[in-house]
View 1 (cartoon, helix red, strand yellow):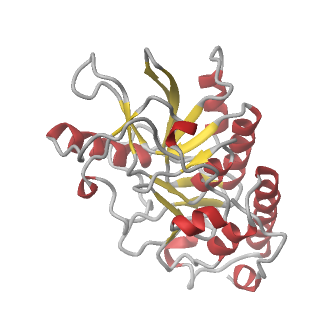
View 2: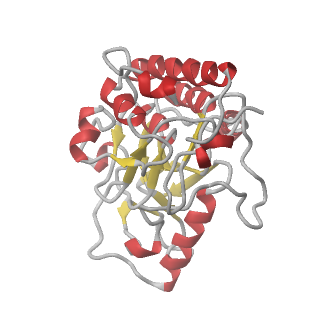
Length: 302
């Protein structure tokens, strides 16, 4: 705690989308969209999965990236990318964060491929097999997901999306951070990973204000949601045009109440009937809280 509160976030601390096309008139609030919204929430609790969303004939398609960043995520992405021509493609993010070092590794891979990034929920086969794929903008990019967003060569955040930041922390002690004990090794891990985040943010073209905002939010406070001004101040947004990241893609918006509320329950326990629990790594981690006490989960040492 003392380490994070004593950090003076100045010039060296830099840290660091989602749809395009013609906006459809009105939000879609059908049983189908409710089911998709509930499914999106459950998928965000699981390890990140990558899927290619085709939108022929006038759209190239995009990569859907949903879930928590774990130690397996960079490897999973490489397996997904094998045999695909992903250079210059767009990644649509819906994630609650995860491992700091693995997010950095994945983000650098995104940049090497020249990927574009945005925030959204990918909707496939809406209205039947013959219907075109679309993106719902009211999605969440929280904690380390923000760094993946920063990796995009171009970055767009729709008005309905939620981009939220907080401190990284020792994940096994984030539920009661004030009462927990911390070793010198714990503090070394957090301090090391903050330094890595700072360098990564500079490399990605982010602004120091992002890490400054994130490090001001301790585990016992609500995550800070970046407003339109802060998204530009931190350089997370590089374009106001959805067509710059997803040309010829429909924009649709499931009803707000059907998606994750802004005050969420923490990802403390494993999701019920989850096919696989998100793995921890020997690194600081940033997972999104999902509980009435909205507090970040962070570094877990295993």
